[in-house]
Image (tube, rainbow, N blue to C red; front, top):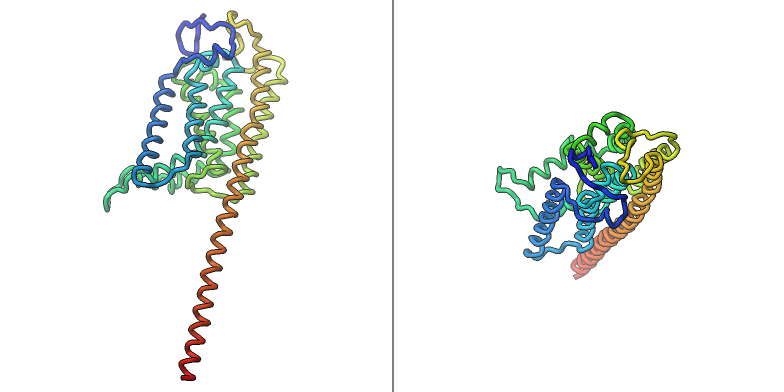
Length: 316
């Protein structure tokens, strides 16, 4: 059959999960994922060799995040996603709402800042350039809730319900660009909320929860809109190949159900992680307060002993 999105002829039998998970790598995402894992591994090894610790949990989280990207972009799920709305929606949900969470919990920026060498005096190396980017006005803008929440919402409604989606799905490069966009949007949306890396915006934990719940309902509304539609709403998936044996409207309803249900998964993951982060923050603050109190107590004791010593000296 004609696989119009990739501009090639490809025989896709009716979709089953087993067929979908067969290896079929998109070159861009394969190279990017392997490079990301290699660079992260280099950073961890560099820290360990100089005797510094790095959390195994963070490493596992980052690896899981990258593997979820490979799952939807380097298997035949990616091929079926070009002609089946439901499979495409799985790709979108995973790469924008699951992969970013695990990647951010892996703290790749913190690892880079610790692993990259410091440039010589008066020079700027990769570490210095990364720090400059983190403190730039650009980062302050793209991580601000006034930007991230509208972008998160627009990536659904403005993309799917406009000709832009069909244009991007018409070529391999366009499809890759769309998926990169979904990943980037997920990263900038979740970074101020759950990210452990340094960033321009670090609101309190309660405000982070509010930011999370400000964006999530729109995914559910988007899914409901697809489920309630009486005709196919996206031209790309209006006429699925006959060999797949699927009905376009039923497939769209399934895509809407996936979008609606999937919004719950990141909400729970992020909420649990936030509660752990909040608890850890409170514990660290309590320890700092205790140490400060101990220091103050030591100073008072020293002052009292000095006072007694001065009295003894006068009496002597």
